[in-house]
Length: 518
Image (cartoon, rainbow, N blue to C red; front, top):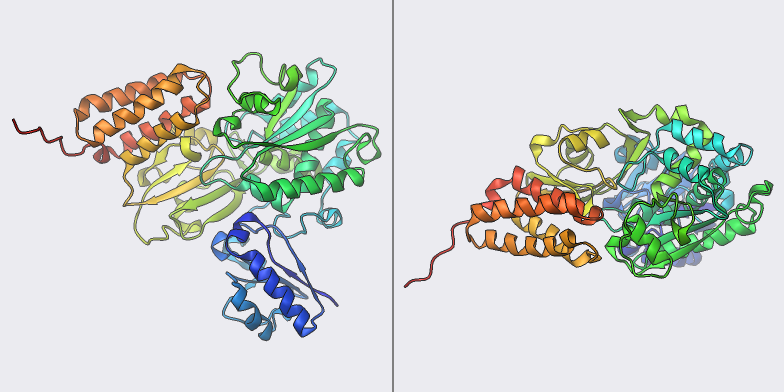
C-alpha cells in the first residue's frame, strides 16, 4: 500500500523551508525505493512547528516537526513511513493539544486534504452545502444564513444574512459577489490559509451566495503579496469549472455562477469595500461616499455582496449542518466560531479556531503560551494595526464583538499581536498615525491631514515638548479623525492611539526637554 507523506505548501511553511524538505524527501524516497508519495497540503496552523511533516498510518496521521531538510534521512531511518519514533515525533496530529482543543468548522479540512483535489474535498464533506443550496429557493438560503447568526468576519461584524437579503431584493439586470481577500492587517493570515489550504470551500461559499442572491459572477480580490494563494485559487477555480461546480449550470441545477481572481497592488485602503470596488473596476483605490450602499450600487453600479473570505468559507457548513448547528456555538450576538490568529512575541503562534467567548487572557497565556522572550506580557493588540492595545487588566474580556466594543476595542479580523514589557507604547501610537498617513487614500481631510499632524504631535511628546498640551492635542486629533473620517482607516486609527494613552500613560510622560543654555 502506497504511503502518503504530507509536506505543507502553505506560505508560512514555505518561508521556513518546506520546499527544501519536500525535495529532500522525494530524493530519499526514490533512492530507497520506498512505496510512498508526497502530498503538498495546507498548514494545520501551528506555525512554531512548521514545516510539519505528517504520515498516514493505520492508526491515523502522525506528525513530526519542525522538520529541516537535513532531518529527512534520519526520519526515514527511524521508520517515518510507519510512524516510527524520532526526536521530532509529535504523536498523532489530532492529539497535539493546540489542535485538539479547537472547534474547527471553517478550517475543518485545512491541512488535511490536498488543496487541489476535488475528490479529496468531496470525501471530507465538501459540496454538501452547495448540493442543498441548489435545491432551495434563494429566499430560503438567505433565511438559513440569517438564522445562523453569521456576521462579517472581516471586522465590521455586520450580519451576513441582512446583506444578502438586501442584494436579493435589489432590482438589477446583473448582480455580483465580491470576496474581499485583501488581507492587510498585521498578524492576520486566516484568509491566506483558506485560499492556500482549502480553496474549494471558498468557491463553494461564493457559489451559494450567488444562488442565494441571483448573482451570476464572482470576483476574489486579493493582493499581489499573496502569489501562492493566487496560484492555488486560480487552479482550483479552473478545476471546479471543469467539474461543473461553476459555470452556466452549477451542479446541473440550471443556475449559473462563475468567478475569477483579481489582484490588487496591495494598498491597505483597498481592504475598505468601496475602495476595493474602485480598484476592481480599474480605477484609483479611493473610498466612495455612502450611500449608495454597495448592496444597491456596487461593482459597475450593480447590486453587490461584499464578504470577507472567512465569512464566505463559513457558509457551506451552515447550509450542510443547518443554521441551528452553527448558532449553537458562541455567545451573545457573536455566533459560530472565529479563527483567531496569534502572532507577535508569543511562544505558540498560529491559527486557533474556537467558538466566540474565550477570555483574552486564556488565548494569550494558555493557548499562545505567553511571550517567546519569556518576559511579561505588557500589551496585546487585537484587530490589526487599527485595533486597540489591551493591558493585562483587560485580559478577562471575552472574545466577542460587543464585549470588545464595551472596552473601546475591536475584534477586527481576529488577529492578536503580543508585546512584552520592553515595548514603548508612545512609539506604537506614533506608528499607528504614521501607518494611517502612509496608507490614506487622501480623499478626506481628517484622515489625510490628521494622521500627519498626529505623527508630529507624537514626536513632540517624545521630545518632552509641552507634553500635557500635546497629549491633549493628540486626543483632540483622534476625536476629529474618529468622527470625521470617511472610512474606517481614519476612523479606527484613534483606537490604538487612545488605548495606548489610556492604559499606558507612563510611556507618554518623558522627561521635559532641556532648554538651551542662554
